[in-house]
Image 1 (cartoon, rainbow, N blue to C red):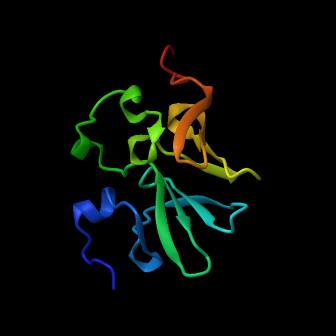
Image 2 (image 1 turned 45 degrees about the vertical axis):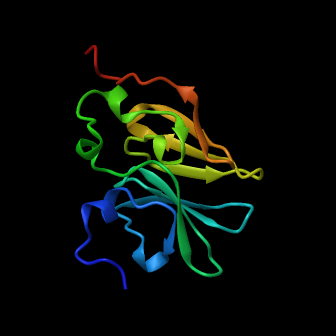
Length: 139
């Protein structure tokens, strides 16, 4: 079961549903149960959000695209690791907190981007608080 050793595609850009055993999780930082009964997993190491169906143990990709920025041609600046969008078009940078509200909105503390982000039930990621300003850039 699973892919071992994992390929770059498997590690970074896997989409859709997969068995929980096959899901690559590098550094899970925070979890939260949603009103739908799914367990939402914030993986800081791969900069993405996953959800686990606790009934049949399959995992689905929610948002973020993975940790290998060079594969996507993203190599410089804080802005290059930030993007609002739907599903894997959204980018996070070292997110460290997650919560799911009663409507199914996922709230993410996008730590290195200095922002709070909301993922709507339809998968659209939007910034709701903060700017992409490094606190020490003018020191």
